[in-house]
Amino acid sequence: MAISTGGSSDAPMSDINTTPLVDVMLVMLIIFIITVPAVVQNIKLKLPKVVNEPTTTKPENVSLSIRREDDGSCGVYRNMTKMTHQELYDFASKKMKADIERLKAAGPIDPDKIPEVHIRGDVNTPYKCIGAAIYTMQSAGFIKVGFISEPPPKDQIQS
Image 1 (tube, one colour):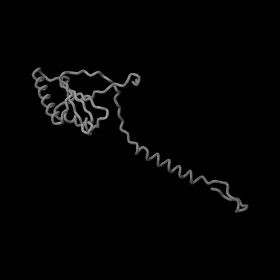
Image 2 (tube, helix red, strand yellow; image 1 turned 90 degrees about the vertical axis):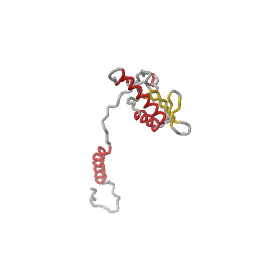
Image 3 (spheres, one colour; image 1 turned 30 degrees about the vertical axis):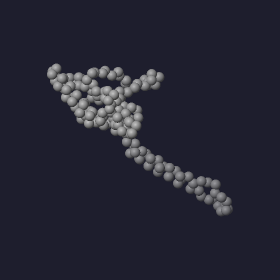
Image 4 (cartoon, one colour; image 1 turned 180 degrees about the horizontal axis):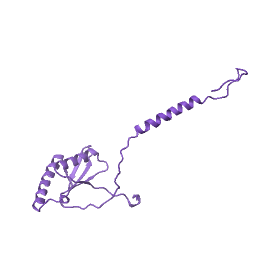
């Protein structure tokens, strides 16, 4: 606090009172220390490392290609044939039943021999299109769903 020591009262005071500024800064520091941990909520995850593994294609696997059509609708293709979700469901449920019967006839069912769905999705395909195809295939009984992607160029691979 600046105190005048006599003299002329008309002279300008050259001292700056920094106590209120320091008080405000300390209060703000305490507020930030308290609120930042409450705002930053983080769930600890260990994210998987990206590994490009070659796909082992079995003849009983179902390969789907999904893209966004020019009119904005979802295009689901199986072997170059466009299918509606109902047609896809009917095909998938018949195929799964036939494959399960075939596996039952050979003895106990090995989970590794159950057919899979491999989805190739265009980069511009909305998630709802791919999600609907996954839901349709899982509703038909397929449990394993894989995504086919293009590996990054060798000069962009991080170790």
